[in-house]
Image 1 (cartoon, rainbow, N blue to C red):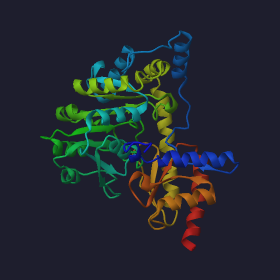
Image 2 (image 1 turned 90 degrees about the vertical axis):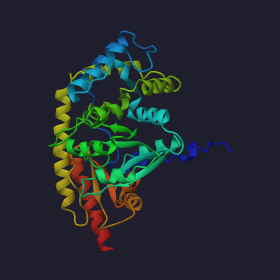
Image 3 (image 1 turned 180 degrees about the vertical axis):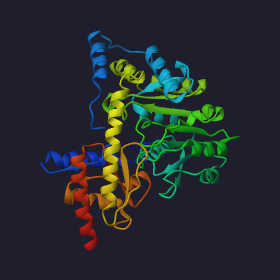
Image 4 (image 1 turned 135 degrees about the horizontal axis):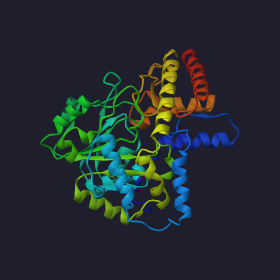
Length: 391
């Protein structure tokens, strides 16, 4: 057989598949409105672009140390101290080609065949796929709207077995926009005491929160600090998706060394220009622009939530962070793939089926686009839903 058993465990990303189909239809001249991509519609701040241009003009185009240049690692450490009151040495940090590579490195360095990884659903589509690729077993825990799409301490306790190696937490969440409060994290931390379970804390949307304070998982207690691997980046909050900048931090020297070794044999260092450009963002020099984007996302969220909840047959809870709505379509359909396929074909509106995130009866709607497009998209969805109800 040509292909490995390992590669055949992977499923294609539904979010990428829907975005690609929407782009293809648009290229064919069809009127398509895409709400499928997890990408800010804002440009990268000029201060960051200027730093990249400077790096190019100064010839900073050669290999660097695998985990990142010293001044960049110092900037990440400074950011974690300033924003999250977390103490990490530069040697506790590895910079990778986006948070996706950070997660890949972590899973490959820690998981063995048969290990169990607890993943609350709805989840980001990549988590279970990378866990399976590492030979481990995703243990999915369903959450619901009643608990704000967040796992409870009781659920966590019930899911832990002798094979549990890791818990994945995402706050703010893709796809629901839920954010764990300090009290909720403390309750989970209490369950994890006396275990050796690793916590992978994906905090990519940290800067995009609405009416709630963000709490870093590693900051809950010394015990959580020691067991938590913090994963973050600049793609979402600083509109740097294409720059490919992610990082992780852990006080476990052995773990950092293992991931450094893996990255040295896969991609080596990330783009040298990106490393220079990321420094001003990490040092807070574009915080005003981040706040401008956050405020715009918050206004869009409020408008989109209001409009969706006026549609007979649909409902959605307001997100606390990120730039997604997880829209309930259970009164209309329990086949989210078919619903989204028909919606795209009949109305030109692209959204992502909830089943791709582990929760049937929903679709994910990204409001990372202008308010006029959002209103028109929801108008088309409302018309589609009316037709479905009448059929």
